[in-house]
Image 1 (cartoon, one colour):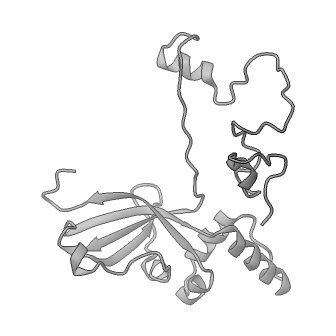
Image 2 (cartoon, one colour):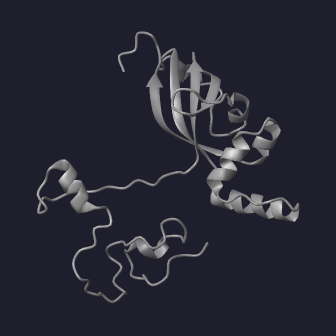
Image 3 (tube, helix red, strand yellow):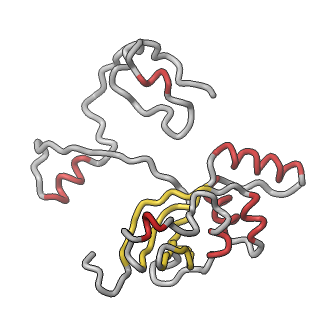
Length: 193
């Protein structure tokens, strides 16, 4: 893997950032670059607009945080008594596509939970997450498609979505998709969540 160039001071993690989606994000502590004065602060996050929306003065302090986003296909996994029984796309938020058989081919999705976990889980629950394709798999898939004189996918998200919507789950399995869970919901009738 290539690494970011220019920051070689010990103790500064920026020298170890791989090139990719995070490349170019400023990290404090990189001192090998010359400082350049700008004509005032750059409000990339729309600080003024946010302050106005919240009814704050322009001198009010704001703190921001950011999370890495996995750009994939939103999926819902339903479990009953610890067993995976239904998987769907998010769809329009009310109705999604049943992709259960294809989701079963993804290694990170448990088909069932051991009895150790099962007794601590609600009888009916849902896990939400993103099905995605990592960059290396995406590049390899596109290389293979080009060798077969097929059109390459435009990006990993499209490749993941197209792979998950295959009518033949064996094709989905060959695509080496991954799953990242980000939400849990108890769907039991007596749930207080």
